[in-house]
Length: 125
Image (cartoon, rainbow, N blue to C red; front, top):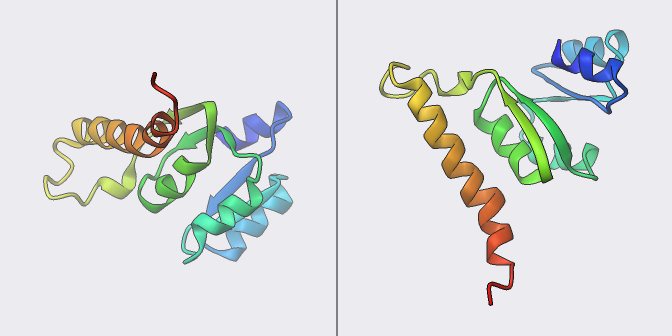
């Protein structure tokens, strides 16, 4: 639904689905601009190819490899809505401390990957 709302407002929308059949539905019926399989061994490269200008808005519902592929493509001032991180449900704690783990995971990944590389390239004099 998030992609459909974004599309109605004129955004370029990329869907992520497991298989070709669902991707065809997403592109042909929902009119998304592209759809990629999260099962693809080259998801990061596939996403980079269809998002050459980077990513400005992202709706996160899965986490895991999808999140890992999206994060390096964030443009400066990009926005992310986090609905869930279902890829983390099988963690050792059985999901009991899922929210705390999500916050820690996002903070660490964001600062390490997104900000870390930007801060490392800044002149701090």
